[in-house]
Length: 241
Image (cartoon, rainbow, N blue to C red; front, side, top):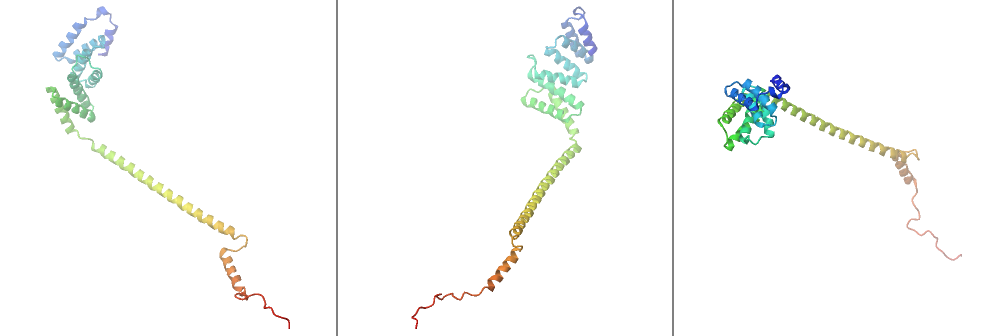
């Protein structure tokens, strides 16, 4: 197909068949079931009319029927992003769902099949579904039923989540331990500071606070009682006999 397009580009305008004849020949081949040759001719039409959405749509259809689902899906998604006025919205949506479904099944892409099935359900809900849409939805649902989600992958995801939770718990425990250690160190430092202050206060006397207290008590016990307590301290006056 690429060689055919290259030959088309290099050929002079006089060597090219009329565009209408080329398109009609491609349509005839498509109707006869010769999708391989039809796609080659539709490719030439697209090369000569790159802005014509009908040519791209016909090329996507022939590629799809020829089993080339991935390139067909790419063309349909391009058309869906900028559809031509002649392509009805429902037809474009149905075509995109069909090519997307086929390409996803080819690549065993469960998410792609689920997306196509969702689009087909929307088409049926809108009441504009064709027989092809109904058939494609049935194919999508059967494929999904026969291809359940990978249990190994689900288990791995659960294990990853558990590992993350365990790491978070370990980190929390480590943080709590670090805080406790810091508090213990602070308490020890406070006690040491208090002891240092007490030692410094008693350095002038060379005694500990307990020794100083005992010495003061001994001094107080050794002092005599005050003999003047409760009595006047002056002698009585009187005449000198």
